[in-house]
Length: 130
Image (cartoon, rainbow, N blue to C red; front, top):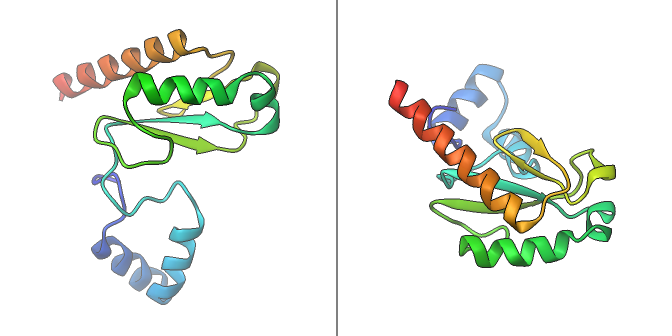
């Protein structure tokens, strides 16, 4: 967790501690999208692409977000990454996004930019306290 992704060393330690093969660990890590194997962007914005959110404009929000943040959905990024997800369980309030485990509904591009900035400023303030 300290690194923000699973290193080879961490995978070896997990396999050893659980007494299972590295292949089994790899199977789990590659199956679940939230397990990351490479260094991640400083902020990840998860955008719901399930049917209810699509009906409420998720695809146009994604297109606008790609332009606003200068990155493509599900592409590597340094500062802000946009990640597709397929249901955040808040279907009545689509389009829905998640930033740092905080869920937001009825999001348009203006609100998304404001939320992203708010979270980045909060992260900087947390870093200054340490």
